[in-house]
Image 1 (cartoon, rainbow, N blue to C red):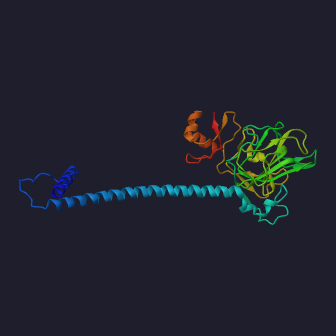
Image 2 (cartoon, rainbow, N blue to C red):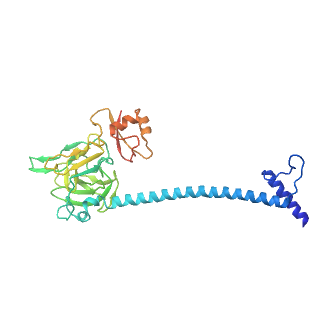
Image 3 (cartoon, rainbow, N blue to C red):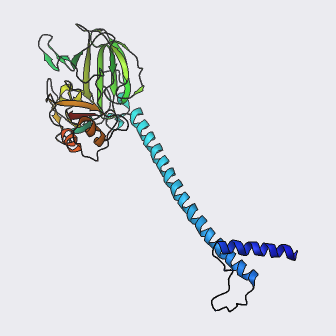
Length: 339
């Protein structure tokens, strides 16, 4: 038994010596220190265990911090997803209220008890996607009063061929899918979180259903020539709380991108053939230049990568689009680029 204890003692001394916790040599001067070797080893082991415990505690603390950060990130992402889901399930409910959703009219305000229309309202246009999926669109008939028919044309007509895909302009939720023989023909109305409702008329057929959530660029219908139509085209309207707004005040249809990031609705400026104001905030440069090309932001794009791709600078892109180098680029956003 004593032989076993002696071997254990030697092993412990060797281990502690290896780790520099005890010395197998006599102290300087050759004087021996009368100290119980077992006690010395026990003390050294306790010190080492204390160091190991501290190291383990630090390691656990680091892991806890990392896990806490990961948990917080997961919670933030979950909250963001829930807010996005709510934003699309109940688009612009803060201004439209609940009752207007069930309206069977293109103007959802008619016959509903709704809060007052705001004097001004900023509409985020950065997400706009061309209804025909291409940047340049051919406007065949414009917004305004038609003397020939003695009635208002509350949208614009865009040339297409029967069967062409018609895409939704912004994220939103389908409020109406209907047919009007002497008017819109087959048509779809979509309400968007930015406050707008868009109308798509003279379709050959809709391929979405009411209450369906859609994302900007999703195909919602096929182009046609139904209803009161003199040839294949898309009738496209932009409305705010039932009030029609000339789409060309919001979008430059020659390039397929908004005139500015924010369009400001101003109450009282929307009479027959009337106007509205584009916000001077974040105003983009004119898109009439033939040297301007359009880039659609894709997943992973950064301003520096886009600038390098087109042989320009981040500052030029920012100036042209009314943004800053710190602006978050949303997927699908259109950026003007100097070619």
